[in-house]
Structures are given as structure tokens and as C-alpha cells.
Amino acid sequence: MTSHPALPNDLAPFWMPFTANRQFKAQPRLLASAEGMYYRTVDGRQLLDGTAGLWCVNAGHCRKPIVEAVQRQVATLDYAPCFQMGHPLVFEAAAKLAAMLPGDLDRVFFTNSGSEAVDTALKIALAYHHARGEAGRTRLIGRERGYHGTGFGGISVGGLPSNRKAFGSLLPGVDHLPHTHLPERNAFSRGQPAHGAELADGLERLIALHDASTIAAVIVEPLAGSTGVLVPPQGYLQRLRQICDRHGILLIFDEVITGFGRLGSGFAAEVFGVMPDIMACAKGLTNGTVPMGAVAVRQGIYDAFMKGPDSAIEFFHGYTYSGHPLAAAAAIASLDLYVAEGLFARARELAPYWEQQAHALASLPHVVDIRNFGLVCGIELAPRPDRPGSRAYDAFLRCFERGALIRVTGDIIALSPPLIIEKTEIDALFATVAEALRAVG
Ligand code: PXG
Ligand code: PLP
Image (cartoon, rainbow, N blue to C red; front, side, top):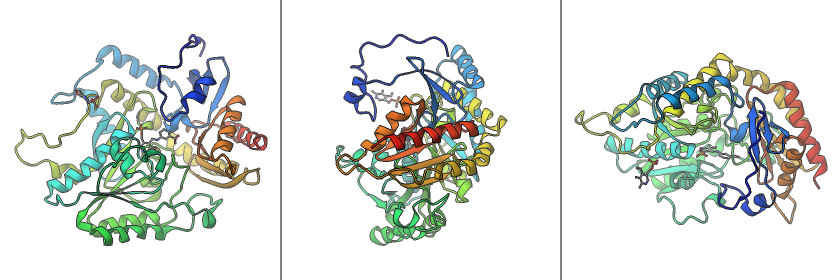
């Protein structure tokens, strides 16, 4: 954490993702290095990472075992194709992930991001029904306020209007469940809210409308992160599972955020006691160090593809970098580190303290809801009537100046620190947010 790179003098060429480019480039915020719970900015200021980067650095930054595994790997086998070839580490990574995953999710397809994992999961669902002679099952059901990355599949099943409206007709044959955000009944719930399980019955209505024989899969985030931390109502996921089972519809959990300990157990499927047929994950898979996503399926789904002559390619899908050696090395080292340090249990043990400190902000100015689960928290602010989103953005800037990195989406603050956070750092994070809420008008 010593050397600072020279400030770039031309910010124009890089078209920044999900960013107000002109606003940012007029007043840039640049990070130079990171270690453990902290970033350091190019001007040498320390920032407490309240968001684990973008929900991905679960074991904290620049962890030695992961850094060294990647360094060793890049000097040993920089790249190897996984089309009709392979390398040992990718098989080891798949086995390690399968062993960590709940239930019989034990066949793993690698991608390079959550978005690719989602598109891969949707394609597997369609091709699975096709392989079983139910090629009429082509519809995909997502949910309002869902975020499933930015591929065409992901934005089609996703339910965030801004991510969809400029991009034409998207995938055909997609419908959406209602979202589960019921602030009038559930505001300030601690953990799972009491009301809203019946919203899962929206699936029965879509089935009545379209007929089950046309529906391939339902995809949801077990806990919706990006849209502002929407915790599933008690009984909701169970009911979705039952309806899918009744109608032969695959249930896909997008665990890109909820996977790898964020909710106080390996995966949301375990936390909520509901098993999907297919799971997408990414982010924490490599602790954010090297891009990688994965799709895990129940063995029966994989088996349905393994027919015809042995020489036949069973699934016409893949990426140049599926199972990249650096990503595989990073995944192995990350999963080992999570286990060695008991980080998922640590998140579970810290969750009550996190919840208490989060809800202590309830009476601060502008706060209209606080929601939490595991080491995630959403703090919803009343929008300024004339400029929605600007209040939370100002709070973000204020926190940045005061030494904490938070994330905002609309007027919702989302916090999701590395799972190595200490209680004193939880205190510091919420104190900084509280100060910002008092300061913003
Ligand atoms: N599914 C879910 C549930 C996600 O949260 C993706 C898919 C896509 O993953 P990639 O790796 O393609 O970005 C995500 C990503 C935020 C934020 O601040 C959230 C995500 C990405 C960037 C910012 O809420 N989630
Ligand atoms: N476009 C072209 C012209 C390609 O040749 C390829 C891969 O070979 C792709 C796109 C897809 O790239 P990737 O496999 O990295 O997703």
C-alpha cells in the first residue's frame, strides 16, 4: 500500500460502466491500492470498504493466499483453452465449488461474470427441456425489480426499467412476477419480513395465462441486492419452489450477490432452506480478484444432456475464457480461504450486531426503511421531490469524503462489507453513514 501510480491525465477514452461519465470525470474518485477492509485513494486517503468492492471481495482485499496463487499461475500456465482441451486447475475448481454448494448442485459450467452466468443458466434451462422432448417450454419468468446482469437474457428477465428501456424488444416470451417490496406492511423489518409470501402466487396466474407447458424456468435473486436489498418474505421462496415443482418448471436462483457467505451461510439456498434446480454465481467465487462466474446444476440436468453418440457436443455454448487458469487458481484459493477462516460462520455470528447497528439509524433524518439480512443492509431514504436519487448520492459523496465507501441505488443505500469486518469497523461504517444523513439536506 505504498506506491501511488501517476494520476491519469486523460479520463476521456474510458467509457465508464453504470456511471454518470461527465459528472465523474469533472470530479474523479480514483482508488490506488487496497488491503483488508480498506481502500487507499490516489491522494493517499484511507477508505473503509462498506461494499466489498461491488459485493464481491468477501475475504477482504489483497489477501496473500489468493494473490500468490494467481501470481504463481500466471507464470506457469497463462492461458489454456477449455474447448476440447483442459487443464487440471479448472477441474479442481469445479470439484471444490460443487463440494461447497448445497444439495445435489454438483455439475459446474464456468463463465467470466454474473451476466454470462445468468445467460448460461437461461440457455441451460431451455436446452434441458429441448433435450427431454419438451421443446415447447420456451418461456422465461423473471421478476419486477430483479437484476440479472446486463446481457440480453439478463435484462429481459430482469425488472429494472432503466436497464431495459433503451434496448429494443429484448428476448421474446418473457414475463415477470410482482416484486416483493411492501414498505407499507414490512418497513423496518429485521431479517425476513412477515408479509408477502402470497406474492409467489403471481406465478400461478402467469401459468394460467401462458400454460405451464410453455414455461421453461423461473429466475429470481433469493434476496434482491442491486435493486436495494429486498429480503424475501417468510415462506415466499418455499411457495415459489412448490409451484415450480407442481408444473415441471425449473427454478433458477441467481446467487451472484448472495453466494459465498454474504447471508451468513455458504448460499441463500441453505439460509432459506429452498433448493433451486440451477444456480448462477460469480463475484465472491474469486473474491473479486479475477473475473469468473459459474452455473451449477443438479446432476439430473447435466445427465439429460449426456445422450447421443459420445462424440457429440452436448451443449453448444461456452466462452473463450471459460475456466481461465488465473480465474481457476483464484477460485481455488478463495474457496480455501473462506473455509480456512470460517468466514461464512463469521458473517452469521456478526449478523445480529450488524442488524442492531443498522436499525439504530431508524430515527435519523430522511430514513423511511431499513432492511437487513446476514451482512447486508439497505437504508431507504425519502427522495427529494424535485430530484430523486440526489439525496442518497450526496450521502455517498459525504461518506467518501469522511472515509467510507458505500453504494447507492436510487435513494437506497446498500451496505455489504467484506466478511472480515470487525465490530469497531461496523460501528465506524454506520457512524459515517449517520453523520452523512444528518448532513445532507
Ligand atoms: N446477477 C445478480 C443478482 C447481480 O447482482 C449480476 C447478475 C451480474 O454480474 P456481473 O458480474 O455481470 O456484473 C449481478 C451483478 C450494485 C451492483 O451496486 C451489483 C452488481 C454489479 C454491479 C453493481 O448493486 N451485481
Ligand atoms: N466475437 C468473435 C468474432 C469471436 O471470434 C469470439 C470468440 O471466439 C467472440 C466474439 C466471443 O468471445 P468470448 O468467447 O470471449 O465470449
